[in-house]
Image (cartoon, rainbow, N blue to C red; front, side, top):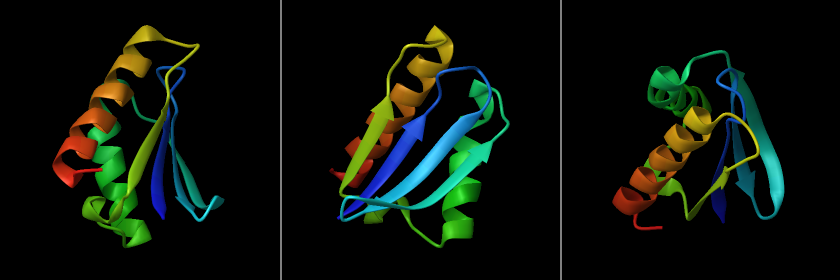
Length: 86
């Protein structure tokens, strides 16, 4: 089971992880503001050679932290989950 992990408690950095079978197999940290989260995710998935359609679940750390970072990361996760049907 592939899981995308998104953590953005502060405006910078954005932390992204790839989980498979209850194990964190990849992790990256992008030093981008909230308006760069989508591009950072896209770039990271290309490096990892993973398509967003491959995820069976998406997990978000929703706080505590900066409201804008939490809001943007949650909207990003909700949107991806909707289009990936997970």
